[in-house]
Length: 221
Length: 51
Length: 238
Image (cartoon, rainbow over all chains, first blue to last red; front, side):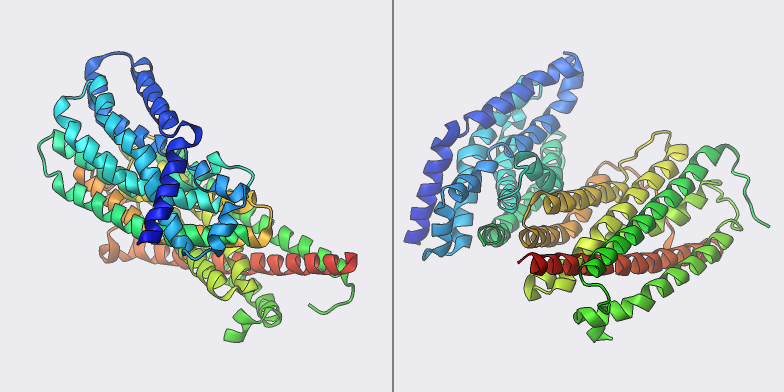
């Protein structure tokens, strides 16, 4: 466990520090939120209907932004080679990278999400569910994103390729999170979709590190 | 014997069949041409070698 | 028979006659299917558009079936590092994408007269759309990595991740659809379907399956030759 906490601390430091940490993703989130009323016309009724879903979707998209860097820096400066050869299993490092991404990027996004949702006209009462879904769903986005990032190592296309690989995989968490938010807002059963989201996120956290490690080994070979 | 009278649905039904035919034709041609090209390339490298 | 799948030489000998045979079978089945297709009467609800069902349902089925084949080939490729498995995975992807595209286009044309819009977020069509994106992602990843062996392995990992996710995607889309109480557009009544529809449908499905088999074998043969050409070229140069 001590080994893991060391690895995790390194990854957290890298995620927070490198390239301004969450600033990029947060800025993207705010920018998209600002564009919605411009695109829809500032009619509050229309925006209220769309706001929760839109805020949720853009949270998912914003979490794609820093994915390239998840493995790339270590890959390029040779650190990934050392990590792969080292005592800690690569899967553990992958787990740490995913968790660090979650803490550094999706965490702040989840905190910003209710502000965005309210700014777009939705009621404040949605805040708890939006934050919860953001945090839990964020795990899925980070780990699925990690799979995309590790698979694209050494490819020429980088960011867009990662998005193309990862976005269709986002379908279940996006659906479950949106379902939970909508049900909460309509005073329907929000626990079922939230549980489904939890289940998916836990599965992703548990399984994706294996795919990430396999992909990283492939890129290093 | 055959019912080809599509009526007002003709603009939907016939293009569906046409697209199906086109995609199959494209897949068949691509597969066959590709295989033939690589067969020639392999045989050019080593003429007379058995398959 | 198993040898033909494992040993490249035996595979080439096997596929040499198997591919054209499957192709011929596919054509005969398609002819029979289309024959019965256009003898079937218009559906009391869907009218003449029921005829699209005979080319949509097989395409949709094949899009999923081919992805499963892609997944199995990818698994074998990763675990056994067998060249034929790798070739099979690579060969299947464009075929699967083609079927998926057909399912989407015919599905859209099928839905338009009934629902008035060119696209309906019917659970099955939505699943097929996500599946199409899986195929596109697979092919994009494979072509984006220069080293061929690495590209094949990366794509294989992605295929398996996608295969595991596919049932979850299905479930989530169906769940979402039930939430919004939209009725399923493209209902096919299953075993309750009258024989006059079921017969051509099954024939077309078998025709598509045989056609896939034939084309898959042809493409794998192409891959085998491609590798041979590359290996021979390297030996000649080195």
